[in-house]
Image 1 (cartoon, rainbow over the protein chains, first blue to last red):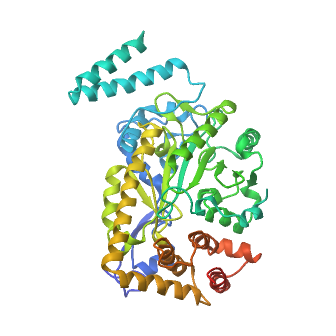
Image 2 (image 1 turned 120 degrees about the vertical axis):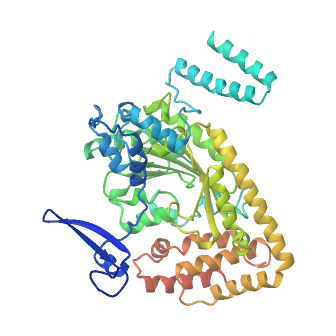
Image 3 (image 1 turned 30 degrees about the vertical axis):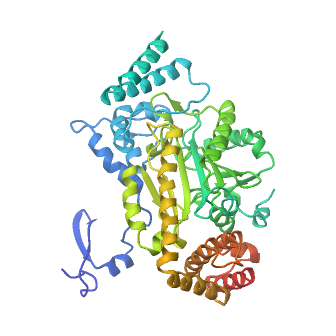
Length: 159
Length: 348
């Protein structure tokens, strides 16, 4: 297929434009496409990447527009820009974000430091969750001595 | 302290001191943090961004490490000054874009820099010379603890520190090590290493971060994931992997000296010769030749060349630095002339 503009080079960029409600297909070579301002975007768009991943998560049957009550961001907005609007968005879009985060990060639970104001009970809960994971690992590895130690520690913390 | 003061001092990451500094140029850790009561900067309106900025500014100035530091609002800087800060690794490319209440606070010795209203409200960064992530972590952790006493961080027990982009959530921590790996590049081993890294959760980039090429044989290695691992584990994993890369580079250097001595000497001395005798040189060629000279200085092949001087040249020959030194705007032609002149002078 040759380029629709120069009619010389081989067309390697294919685009579909809507002109006057009609779909028009254009086949261009790289040079003509660049002149027309069509080409690869300068930065590799993380937003598009994320949006691609979020597609899996969208309920397919009915599309309810979810909006963050705090900042007004909709899930559609997030899909477009790839950045959340505020800290409450995490709660608002929890159902969609949870599988997305698991896909991106391969984990579902924060392990690490806390701000000082994080409630002691929350802190305890996370620590116990972490210990439980260690316990499972120790059991899997048949390291029963270590497992017993971890179990006792969990018991102690749950008191 | 003013922006022009920075020009007269050596950037921390180029001091060329610290453990393994012949191969590991610098260690960097950054934490992404947000305020729970404000929308994230890119989504917030101008008024909100302004309020967040003034709140954060007030708190940052009370931190002892930053008291005598430099505060700069990006909206008030021209393109050249922004580029200058970017070249010194004190701000990100993202931070140079748009006019939207972005600012940066930089400590006296350029070890700490805190970007405000970047993608997240706070991007705290600590930069140390050499292979020294543990000191960087100690300092940044202390800083973070001081800040959280005054600022209400956005945090969730499940997902940790909440960030605008889900790729940073959890610890919000990105640890990076910048390495100079000429021997691995010369012996064509670097490709294999880079391929293996992604399997270990480590990302490789060029000298100036995301999307930049590895010019001058510089590579930045950092952790990919931020959730589900403690800060110490993330740092430890990166350290272990990079330790091995350092060992490979050292081995390759020895091997080159043993088996391809003449080729190595030839490349290093020619690079030195070209740099000392150029009247017109672009930035790409400069980086590659300086890389060879740096290797020569490391291996004591170029006995009269100080490592620190070569390190400085990597920075001073960057476009914005050349123009700041000259004190005026220079076009590409003038920069290539000035660059050659500066190198001749410094390598005398």
